[in-house]
Length: 91
Image 1 (tube, rainbow, N blue to C red):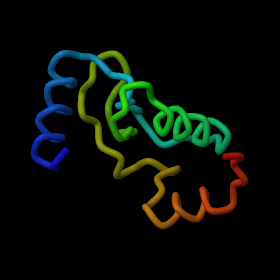
Image 2 (cartoon, rainbow, N blue to C red):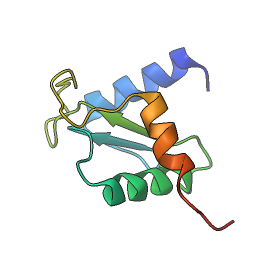
Image 3 (tube, rainbow, N blue to C red):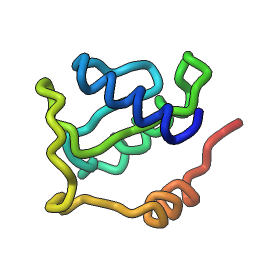
């Protein structure tokens, strides 16, 4: 799926107030690494056959875009990659 199509699909989910098997909205970043790993594994193993996405900065229940600028647990891509590199996952 190209970026434009993904943006449209995510916007539609926000408008409809729903998540899907491959898309999980979170209000803020996890403060618990086990919960973060669990959510990543769930998205990686979704049953839809699509790439999984965890999208941060979306308010629970209202689906309002809140942003993550002030999230003390915010991680960048490299921090997430480093976190996952250290995990031993059976194939």
